[in-house]
Length: 307
Image (cartoon, rainbow, N blue to C red; front, side, top):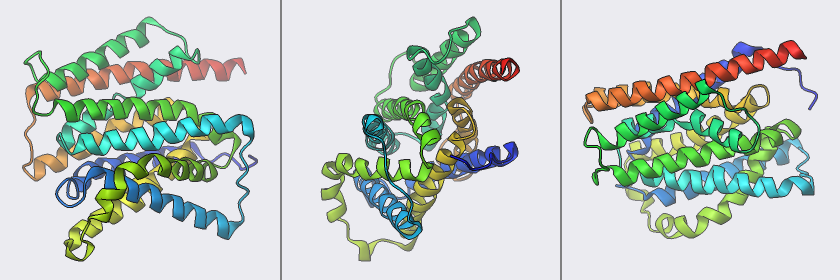
């Protein structure tokens, strides 16, 4: 691509906006699910709406939609991990746990990005990184058990689903980055969401067909619009754009801010109270992610000097 690289602050501003959008989404989505729409119905709405809007955008602009044959397999994996598995686990998990828990668990995404990069030979293991991974894992365990040191049935399935969602999204970030550099990000997104329809249709069709749209309160319709236009189209587009100019780990770093937004809303609405174990888990996860990202920053600076 021949576009001029944007200013660094603009990339970070876009990622911060994504963090705010997602931070609000935890509570806004819970206005919809599971009382008015089931999770799979919301997912199908998201995927179809974004695929249609992106397709219309490309049609009006006449954007070339060609993807080389050697990249189509990777595109299928991105659709599976970034749309089907990611969104099914997230919304099903969110319906079974609190917004605060879900947002804290999602901060483990940068750790998963590093783990996958290590397994794929894209990064090198260091003592600092391994300590960060261990602290993040310990924080996730403390959050899940809340001092009981055993998995609690109350929120455990929802928490584990969100954890699986974080792992799936991390794999998506790692796999999609080369595609974002080679093709226009909105072209990649169009195919990811269009292919994703095939995966979510069997889960969401029945639930969506049973919705009585005329009887939905106005605030539910507003919440659905937010999930479709802000959380899905805007957030994914900004992330895709930012991935052209920065590392996947940097994109993941901004997930740091999501629990602050989600927990603040939860506390303000009186939906939850912060336990000492939640605070301890947050501190452990944040420290782990900090150690992982500091190491990545140093590596990038060294690479720039060598070049």
